[in-house]
Amino acid sequence: MPCQIVCGMDLMDSNSSLEEKNFYETIIQESQKHQSSSSTLSRYLTPYFNQAVRKNDKALLAIYYCMLADQSFNQEGTKNSFSDKYYLKALDLENGYSYQNVRTWVKVMYGFYLYRCLKASEALPFILEGEKGLEDIPKGLVLDLIQTYKKLGYFFGTLGDYTSGIKYLNLGQQQEGISPRLKAEILDNLGVLTLKSGGDTLQAMRNFELAQSLALSENDSLRYAKILGNQASIYEGSKDYQKALRLLDKDLEISKSLGNDRNTIFALMMRIRLHIAREEIKDVRQMILEAEALLSGSDDKKTILELEIHKLNLAIQNKDFDRELNARRRIERLQDSLRFLDGDPVLSQLKFMADKQKYADKLSLAQAVIKKKQAERRLWLIMSLFVLVLFFFIYNTVRYRARKRIRDYEYQLLNLKYTKAELDRELTSSKSQVEEYVAYLKRNNEQINLLSAMLEEKGGTVDKDRDELKTLLQSHLITEEKWQEFKLLIVKEFPNLLQDIQTKFPDVTESNLRVIVLIKLGLNNREVANVLGVTPDAIKKSMQRLKKKLGDQAGLLMEYISDKELV
Image (cartoon, rainbow, N blue to C red; front, side, top):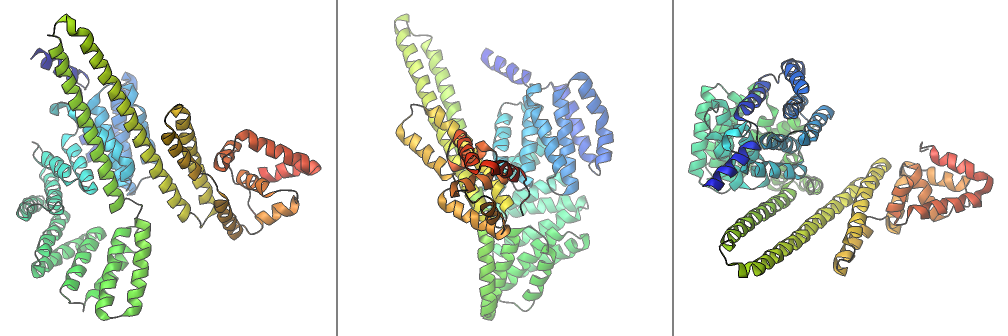
């Protein structure tokens, strides 16, 4: 019991006091009411900013920047320089305060922001840190508890971790003081996750009906329309297409009257799907045209892909071979572009990584608990066993750390391989512009530096690990094949560039040409050395020999290289 009291005090001391927590939470919730414009929010928050600066309250300052970032994202409808800048400022303040509950709230806010920017892979570590932080915070001290649960539920639900998603959404909707409008939103999404997880359709329908009642009481027409569409998906699953279509008709009527294109598209897509399933294709062509018009200029590739699949099914039913062929080509292109975005394969991999991290955390916690109990029991042993116990404890600690180092190395190597695959995909997609290829080389340099550092750290490690790192490092270098591809790209975009160099400086060799082109494109000596797999000194000596060979023309060459204009 004494231990429990001390531990409880430690947890309280690591968070803001209840009075501070209530003060911070009031600012967060009031700021959400002033999101209509940046000037309105700024007027509300300015006194608190001044107070934070005056009292050196870094936690309050972090909250201030998060609210500005959130407002900027909401106003623009997408990530922008202000939202990025403010969130990074909030994260940079982390070492300036000790409140675990504020840190956790900032991590969840930033992770959810990245998730809304369709960067689930970047969001994952912040969301996991936020989730882990919640375990150490008494419930009464968690900042903005309902919204925090909601964000975690939405994120894990998108990843396909329906168990965690449902858990957090349930926790959110059960909290006291939740507004009817927010409860309707959470219940609606809870019903969707229940369906996606293959759960009880009756429970999903009960969630939808409760959400529907709350939405109507709040005159929340958009939420009501979304619920109608989600209820239609239940009837679609049971093949009661007539009921599903009736609900979709209401959904479409409301969504169109509100001018909400996103929800209108969702309802239209389901309606097309149901008409094709019923083999009632008379009006499908018109619905497809309507959906295409709404998607014009959109970057929603998943919905566009679904629409192309509907076109394919329609062409097959109509035995229209030309349209079938065109649809299959467009589908193949869209699937290629979606394969390495935050689509199903990437989300599945992220779910695996999240599960692995959670398992590792639970294992570490379990091991810590076991060790603590063993240590307590050992205290009662006679002194003659002390040396043996101490040896056993040290042995276990060393073994645990060795295993942890291996796990950390494997995890880091997995991330490096994943980044390599990502860079290769960027290289494939960047063959339309030299500028994008150069950006690819810059990112490649970061990976080469990281791998080189890892090789130095590994020192006397086993040959297998060093060989694996060397192989990965070699894969980042510009091979002869890559150089020839790059030359073709340069000739395509800048037909005179290579010819111009060789005409002005006929003594330039092929290896000299690589160095000249890469430097002219903006890479420094170290970066050129990295991607060519040589040392910076080798590059310097190569250029010195070339200058000596060119004689009077050496100055002209340096002037030519320093001029970054590509003609």
